[in-house]
Length: 332
Image (cartoon, rainbow, N blue to C red; front, top):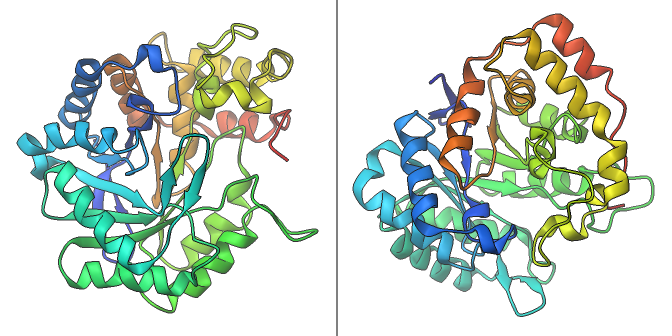
């Protein structure tokens, strides 16, 4: 697989990554099977999908434990990205950016992952009670201690409070400007897909101008852009899509023209090309500093997603995707 680099330190990863969250958290619990997920991770590494993206909150903790079973055997083939800063309670999620907690959380992640170093340690969310510089400073100490190789920041969520008239990623850019004064940012992780292209306006240009890598989260639109979801089919209660405005039956039906365009472009490239691969190829086409991180727990989808690295969209394809109507339904 094509290799891409993250950050000024030129950390090399496969052009397509693997988002591990669906294996243990946030999606259909009844379909989560440990053995199947283990096969998916092994298949990813076989194909050169080296970036494994997890977080201590996924599960919580069980996703890191699952990855640890693979890393115990194949650590040298993997690029491990995990996150810190969010705690999961019974009915809520809270931020914790206290320096002491960050250091303890890192040690715990290292134990669960069965490794002595984390390639990319990301701040999941800044704690509003703690200056972000203090949290980032503690993370920088972990780099100096040899427990972490590089630091990253996850973008503030779309539902986070924004100043009147502010653009979606303004708050994230303000955080990045602050932490960059403490220790270099190697990567930013944020949503980017053909139906959520907002990062192209300000956040991605910020990263490009500073040599910061960009991990594209949800590049398949939480599964919608694969064309495998049926409007009105419904989701299990704990599935995050059950509460997402774009996943009501009405909005899923209204956004079908996006999937239809992806399928039409896929058909032009041959019988074996899927809508999902076109969606990932679009993300890859946004620059060599961009690495899509599609989430899945199934080996067959890992294989399909990896195939997108070899798909080159034409100018005609890209023009059609630029002309797509804006997706209907949002958090705001």
